Length: 458
Image 1: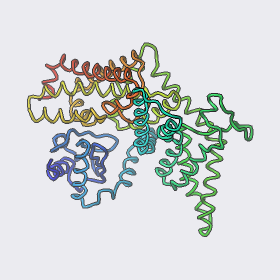
Image 2: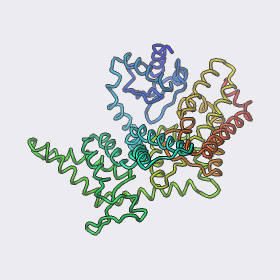
Image 3: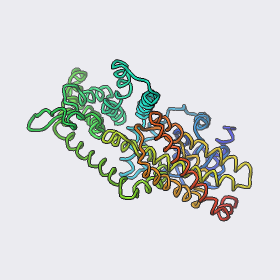
Image 4: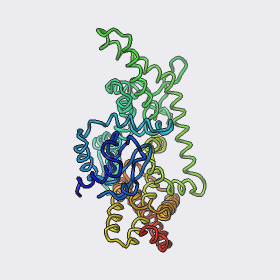
């Protein structure tokens, strides 16, 4: 790909370099915030060299290039703009937040806290899959080796509040080390284990008339810890003498934060968190698979908004409360439906170059990345997108029929197979869901091929 031509096309589409206020990139997209959105030429933006699609959302003009290539484009763009490749990330986030509604800011904040944790959680899920595969193959473990596998598979979830407290403290501008310390205190062995208390194998401590136990598996209390640490640290620093700052400020920050979490905010947040997770489970498990059908059909709408990473908080809650994550299967079904619709639509292009671009935009979906497919192919015609939604909905119903759920999170579609290596029957059902959703999406496009052909070739 000629990055220089691509950059020239992008700048021509957005009104020139002088109209670019800020820029950044994610896994697949070059994101621009402009001085004046009215200067954008949408037709040029949709025909940028090497781009698989363009869209505007939450004040950002986003060009889809796909994994790997977006890094090259961003490096070339940064060079053209005369700035370093990472020099404006913080100001970009500030500009993004300025364009968000209060609800969007909350969801975006949750995403910013949880997304950095995904690699660790994905690794844990893969290790669980490997352990399951070895058991499925008939390999038996001694107590020592089983303990070793438990260390590999359970540590990240056992210390999840520590990871979240660190990420949240860093996000809110506090000292991450203090966040880690308070997070460790939340799961300290001196506190009765939350899961043991829930199962009746342990009893909570009683202080000031309140039952106190550990925060294993908790999410929202750990996020609040990060926020409190960052706010209290800055507040105490305003009046603590500088010569005492190194000792007094961390001491007060840790003590006050822990007191609030253990005796005030924490118990309330735990109850609220359980209520939210149980409500979601109730909706998904609506009679006759209605919840499965709706989620399978509509999940990719959340991806369009760019807020899909916030679903991780729900997946974590499901894993912590039920040990299973049905959203992984339903998300894959939604992707497979859109993938089937995109492949069918690709062959309706008369222009060979456009057909090739459509197929290349669809391929990353196999690895769980759907933005190139959505913005480069399916959203060019609502008939294609709706066909994909129907495929995802049917895949969701299949998930309900099979009563299928994953034991991990973070990976979908083909990589998601690794979450089922411990159960051959579940893996075959997972593959069947993908095939059915793909086929239905494909067929729905073919049924409308006459009208869709006119739309994509106009």
